[in-house]
Length: 80
Image (cartoon, rainbow, N blue to C red; front, top):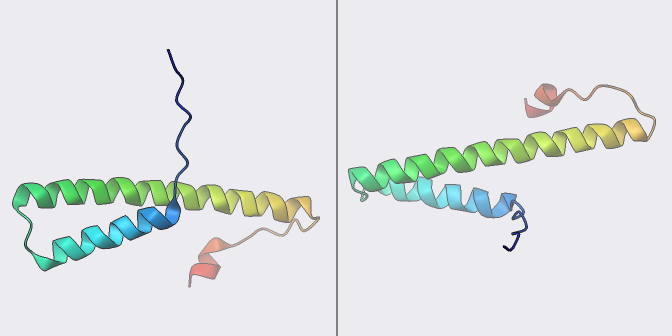
């Protein structure tokens, strides 16, 4: 039995796929079934992107703390 290495998540590729899905859905040429499949795939990609961003945020926070700066990073303030 061979073990498969977990694939690494490509954030940029996921965003590109999301953009393609949105474009296809906005054009209105997909059938109902195709639209539902595109929507489902879009939700999955969105959740994966959110998870990747959270992990990156945590990593940045750890790096900031390791460098002696223990000031809390306020992500919501950065988003505005």
